[in-house]
Length: 227
Image (tube, rainbow, N blue to C red; front, side, top):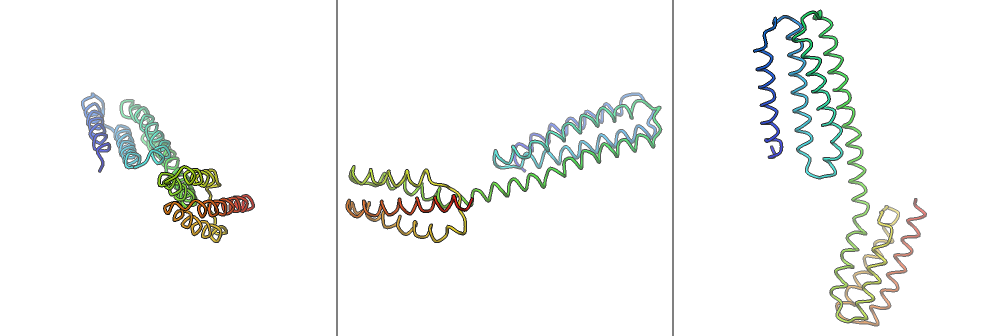
């Protein structure tokens, strides 16, 4: 249990205690409609706590943002239930069957709204994870190329390294199985370029950098065809 949820649980418990004190010290007949309203509000308190746990356990800003609609609906559901439940508890003219039906309909409506959001959130998270995986090759290669510019020993080789880095940096980041062969060739050629830079071999680095940029351009053209 993270610290945020522990803090929220304390606030929630205080709110729940306050509700119970008000419910039982207020002079009113504790008949059927009172208990329906009391159970209705208590249930919504529990649902809201569960939604808050789901929201506060998220470990990234992106996940927190995606789960924001769930916590928002849970707060709205709690406020609505308090208003409706209070009427049931302290206005004793309502037949018990009406209070039960209204409570069930409101509970069902908000539960369906909350539950139906989860598949959409999961789908978005899966797409996000897929995009991260598909862009991993180019992002990793760009980091290696940027690091290589710092290892360059001469200005001439440094300029070559920067050209290669720019070519990689502004290339299409998306990946595909159809690009496996092309990317394997790029990986091998980049290793050759890296060795020539470390060895401070200007002539070899210049030749390999040209070949590497050609491979990158070829990959970009294939990316366009795949879209």
